[in-house]
Length: 261
Image 1 (cartoon, helix red, strand yellow):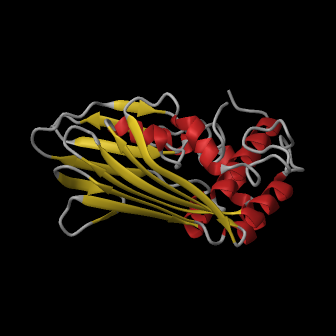
Image 2 (cartoon, rainbow, N blue to C red; image 1 turned 60 degrees about the vertical axis):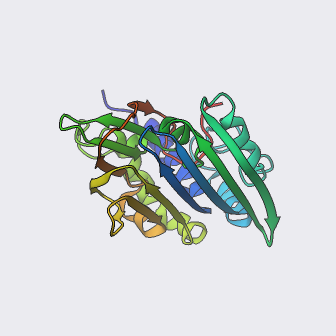
């Protein structure tokens, strides 16, 4: 059943809003995983407060916007004014196998910088804890290799086309990109993942020794696709003790904004 024009427009607004708020940041994750799925990660998030406030105001008057809209909120209490570290701390509660060893937040020159260092007992714990709010799936393949994939809702079902072809909300959000560009042009989101064994294939940039992969998402990438690109890596090795999992964190409308309360 196809969605109504109003539903498609509201979905596009929510997707654009979540992408836009994600675009106000420079974020980097450096993750190291061992053969049993445990490991460490460090994360740095830099939020441009003026850009975030401008985006909230620019998107505040569209369909589905306002103080009750998911991922938006009143501009005096929304993401531009929230403490990002406090938001992360709330998300960390209840994540089994996570030990945060450092968590600092500093506001300077109109930017908030958050630095996090943590240990995890399972790769699933990292997927739930990182500030990159994407879905994550780890599965074992028939040949004994493993595939890890991070994706937004729009990318989660790639390979199974919806009736009518392209995703309406993503296409409409893409059309809104010129309005968002002044605030999002400095977007840079990087994830480096060092894995046990050897990387077989990936859509990221593989290191020369074949043990790590890096993904970098910029504003230009979002303009092209209207959404965050999926991040996929397949790796293999001996004596792995990994556990498959599936985590859904990208709420309806795409990654980046606050998830369900």
